[in-house]
Length: 261
Image (cartoon, rainbow, N blue to C red; front, side, top):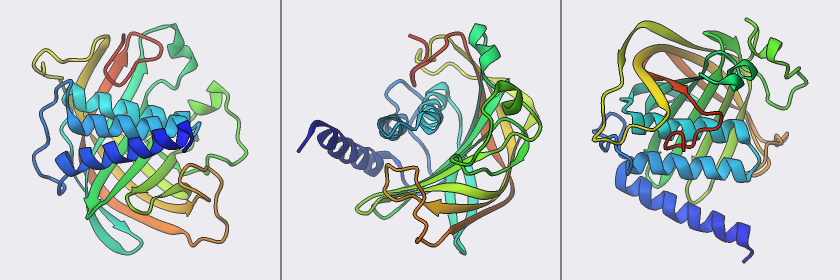
């Protein structure tokens, strides 16, 4: 067994253990928001998996999801129709920006919906990232400009991904549809969490209106971003709902999932 395979095997075993310990039915009480939050640790492992597959964008989304949990965000229930089957997820939105010179190189407020559920020994995770309140869902491999001007324009596209991790794992990417992740104006400061508030990160708790109708295509392997043209598509729909969220401002260019080092 080579080193990369060993890392993935150990990571999968660790993730399975964490999920068995902390990710139960949606809506149930979650672990306290501390530096040792086991749910945040499970998102860290998923982030590592994406970075190893050279998917930096989704790796960052999952890393910031772990940071949001450690900052005290409170997930809410999100109802989703997955290929015609009603499923109930826990979900929250994290929105991030930077108070540094790198802020000019990033979209002004990137927001991501993170939703997850456990069905038996299978973990299901839905990610939806965008820089505007609503946008069409784009295939990340489609031909498009990556200039900062387009990323911050009103027509910037949303990126979506869906993962199933368990005895049989699969990865799906959004290739069409529309999505909405719009912030509500009311917000509160994040509470202190037993002295575990991430360093270099200021945050506010808020809520977001969420809706989506997304078509997903399965990738050739769980670590691939190439679509399997022979596999059937998957449709996921969520009617307009409200979920909890957190707005985070980083004082460093590249924060970890525990804050600025």
